[in-house]
Amino acid sequence: MTPKLSYTQLKTRLKTQETKLRKLQRLVERDNLTGLYNRPGIRKEAQKFLNTLEKEVSLTKRGIERMSHLTNIAVIFIDLDNFKKINDYYGHDKGDRALQKVGNIIETILRNLDLVGRWSGDEFIAVLPGANKDIAQKRADQIQEATTICFKKVFPKAGASLSTGASAVFENGSKKGILDLEKLIIKADERMYHQKRKRKHKTNKT
Image (cartoon, rainbow, N blue to C red; front, side, top):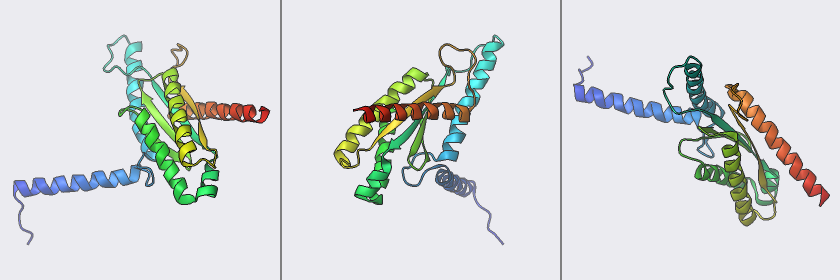
């Protein structure tokens, strides 16, 4: 017969189970290499902010006072340039270290409130609650500059850097916003590729 647990024992056991559950959830939602959110993890967390903003927009339309100060959400899409050359020149271990460095740089420049995730191989996204597109692009430029300086010191042969693009729910004073995470990511991704092509064209001309 299983002995009965005291209130204190039961409370301790529940707390232990909750800790294990949080650790398991972290494993499911985090990227093993960088410790950042993985794709499902950042999707889940970003959707919470988008749901809150959608409710706020609905309240405003109905003339009801807002429940929070969340008025916009921005997304930054980040893609490493010449990442393959880091692997080729320095080996895959150093390539992994490069991804970790990029993750650290992004988290250092952004706020604790912002979400940062590894989207795929050498692609990252960041979600900035309360930020507009201009603020997001400014942060993206800072990330780009800091990464370029770091890579020139650590991986000088590779010529690696990164390209960025930003989007926001509400842009250019429009009252009709994009409250769909996938669409925001696609728009930021398109702007990132535009920047990448522009830089490549400029390099080819010189």
